[in-house]
Each structure stands twice: as structure tokens, then as C-alpha cells.
Image 1 (cartoon, rainbow, N blue to C red):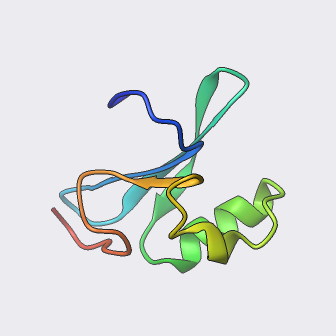
Image 2: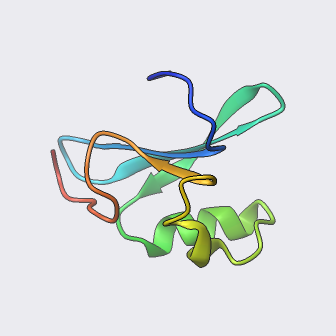
Amino acid sequence: MEGATSAPIVVHRPSRTGGRRVTVHSSGRDEILGTAYSDHDPVVFLEGTGVADSEAILDDPQWVEWRGGPAHQFSAA
């Protein structure tokens, strides 16, 4: 992993081909939820894990850490 964070959800740096990996830290391990290509994707991933109001938490640093690039930017690195 790229380092410890207190936020349980990490949106990783954009890949060379576009998109950002989204992981959730739970029960002492990181689980890959998928690759996001827009804000809609992490919202869907989080809804699938039972997170209520997942769209509202994307900008909450207590919940989500955006690594390696600006928040809400999904284009190729």
C-alpha cells in the first residue's frame, strides 16, 4: 500500500491509461472496490458496500483520501 491513512476509503492516483483504483480499509486489510473513471463510480462502489449517502462523503477527508492527484480528476496521469 502507499502508506497509512486514517480515512477508510482511498481513491488512488490516476493510472497511465486513466481511471483511479478505489480501496476500502476494513477489518485490518485493504479491499479493492474497483477502478473509477468518474465520481459516479466510487459512489456506486460505496453504495454496494452499504455506505449511506456515499456521494456526500467524497469530499469528507474523514472518509475519503484522494491520493496522487486532485480530487474528482480521473484522467490519465
